[in-house]
Amino acid sequence: MFFGLNNILKKFLPTGLFYRSLIIVVAPTIFLQIITTVVFFDSIWIKANKGLTRSLVGELKTLSDIYTGEDSGQINYLTQQYKFNFDYVINILNEELPNTVMERKYSPMDRSLRRELKSVFGSTNYWFDTIKYEDVVEVKVRSTDKIIQILFPRERIAPSSVRIFIFWITLPSLLLISIAIIFLKNQTRPIINLAKAAEKFGKGDFVSGIRPSGASEVRKAAYEFDRMAKRIDKHLKQRSEMLSGISHDLRTPLTRLKLQLAMLNQKDLSLKMSKDINEMESMLNSYLQFAKSQAQEDSVATNINKILNEIANEKSSKNFHLDLPIEIVLVARKNALKRCFNNIIDNGLNYAKNVYVNISKSTNNLHIFINDDGPGIPLNQYKNVFKPFYRLDESRNLNHAGVGLGMSIAEDIVRSHGGSIELSKSNKKGLQVKISLPL
Image 1 (cartoon, one colour):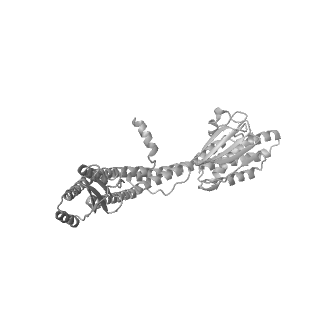
Image 2 (tube, helix red, strand yellow):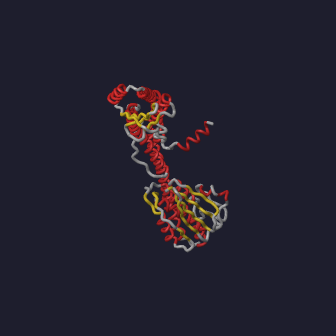
Image 3 (cartoon, helix red, strand yellow):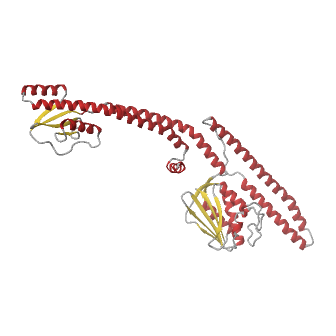
């Protein structure tokens, strides 16, 4: 039961730390104010209103009893006293009680007045109006064959402390909530900044200038995150520099071997060995490309359409088809994305007749579809092709001229941008590569 209730509450409660903290602070305050208001209204205001109404109805009953007598002198004297001391307006009318209801249905004051008049005069011998006048209440009472009209100030039955109470219970609450919002903003801001820095670092961007602030626990977390980010950056740079250095150093002996082969008289042997050297040189280029994909590059506003059009112009192939119905600009590492698209498109052009690229947009993501009409990839090999140095032995080899790093580099670049890359069967009977990037 509690598990189900918890799931229901999760759907309606905010997900942000600031708003959850605000609920923790504000909810008890509001709940306490509601309880205080209900207790005050029930035990103080209603009782005070009931006492005032009962006293006033008693005065009206006394006045009605006086008018049943025949001593006109006494009637005139008491009428003048009521008008002078209680601020009443008293008239004798020769008419029937009105049939229209001129009271507020849900007003506690009207309900209390109706209850007291009914208990004293009966249900058919009175009528009152609290709507017609703003500060005056009109009551008509049947006394023998006369109708007595009494007008008296509304404050006689409405305690004035209600407005003051509402003012003093609302103003401090708003003040306290405002102070709580200011303090909560200051406490949650460092956590939000740390979360943004972690998200940025997770996408491969360089994070610098993290200033620990806020509570001691948040400061420590920010400090440790900064140290961790610097260690990871240093490790990635060392790995890239080492791989780049090794690849670069191997070019020198390969160049010497090429020169020596060119001087050989045995051309058949020279051609065979040249092919091996060219393959080794291609491997080194792949290593260098992999090292470059790990290198640091700043994220800038990047036009995806321009990148794909640049690739199309570089390929200059009639077998490369672009369909770009919308123009998309997102913050990304331009050179890395271009390298990613190039790797996948090159694979398609190498092992298929045609490659088709089109883009679409959803609420929060950009989708790039790269389809070809080649032999495709077996379903059980979809995960393996993203492994570094993995090469298929099937008729379609994604890295025929390389060492199996093309798709690994592509996946690494896409994931470093916070996106995803998926393989599936293409409607062109080949392979479909779907790249999704957050906008």
